[in-house]
Amino acid sequence: MLLQIPGVFSKAEVAECRRAIDAAEWIDGNMTSGFQAALAKRNEQLPHAGEVSKVWGARIVAALEKNPLFVSAALPQTILAPLFNRYGAGHGFDNHVDNSIRMNPATGRRIRTDLSATLFLAEPDEYDGGELTIEDTYGDHSVKLEAGDMILYPSTSLHNVTPVTRGMRVASFFWIQSLIRSDTQRALLFDMDIAIQALAAKSGQDDPAIVQLTGTYHNLLRLWAEP
Image (cartoon, rainbow, N blue to C red; front, side, top):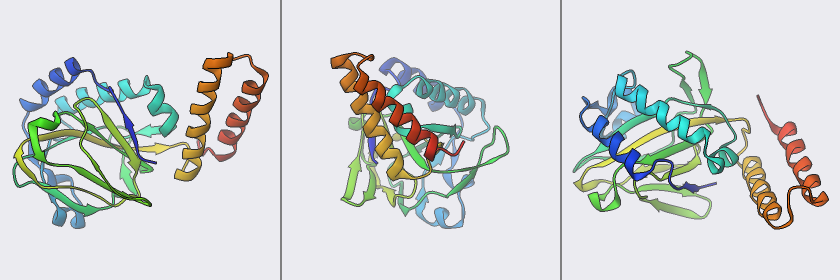
């Protein structure tokens, strides 16, 4: 499931974030890469242990925890601390699949990466190129969103960032371990939740059919969840 989540950050929050991260010290993005990724990746990152990364990573997580669309789609168990990267002219990231297991620096525990997320922090007209291209069953999808919007997609997806030819592409990226390992089951639950909300808006929460459907949703969640 490929899903755009609009307005994770307001334009004012994006501007505040950019002032902080643009003034920070950036490092070669391959400082955090594995061997294969280092061959494909050309960008810069903020050190994940830096104060700016910690503060703004926490702001992103707090915003997502209050975002009903994200919670419904991701059913998050753990949100890995967000990282920040930027791509200038000549930078890009060739085709790759994200690592299946990553270390959570906050706890020292490993998490399974079920979902990948990119929160765009530069407006589309600030740079040329830099599209996030994600491959799924229906072909390649080119993603270049407004600043403050986020794309959520399965971490199993082959994807790349096309070379930037002008300006600077700035974003936050991170991974989520879901309560639901299967993307198919997660998508079914999301579709059911959206349908229940739409019906409830028309008929009211106390409609017996909606109560029954809500119970079915939670029973499926109970059946499939891996807490």
